[in-house]
Picture (cartoon, rainbow, N blue to C red):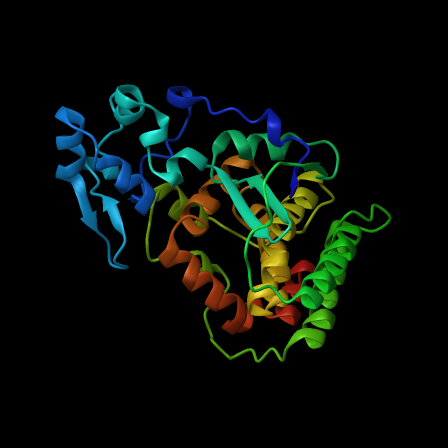
Length: 320
């Protein structure tokens, strides 16, 4: 199998208790089936603590019931994990072991990266002085079983390569690159499947008022947001690159590539409108990418909201 990662991926290191935020606070922690099985053989105090906090969420998933201030019940006063300390990292849920990494498997290729939701990862991407690049290596794992249509996958890999070329074109302003990216998204969507956008009348800033609030700072950001010009900054190029890398090829499953393109453009507008810094992207990502409820709503709005149509986004980029 080929493993593809951003060039900075191996430099990432969790700073644990020194982190300015906590990935163990604000959202529920899913206890996956394999992890639950490993708990069945435990004994003693840690087993009793785990059993006492297992619960079901509204989607039927088994989760750890949160303590005060939405903290994981195993997050101690030093912002460290009591499960990790008592019996080892391998007994923490899969989400905890992999965060802030994301993994997309496409048969013989696995793509991994790190999410803006982690402040350290967000800082790394903010500090990049060159366009985001990627490295491939062979790993000793067999291809994953899948139902991917090979022809669609190869079409999308070629299309994504061009999308990267558009956003990296230093001969044009970033705003113009994003406009061309939207036009390209419309073009390739027509090759895949009809895209019927409904006339949802949600206003642009209301898109970001998530029903499930994780950090009140995000509400302040949205309430103080304003439309501004998109400047020529490397950070904006790499925000778009992050979304293209993370989501573009997942259109092989739903044939909705235009929404993935729009996500890249809106990602840049998040920084432009709400705060030109890594912390803003961290807040947005934690609020949206890591809340199933908020992300489902956001995906629906990308397709249905008139304010997020390709033409509406182009007008925002032109500051009209």
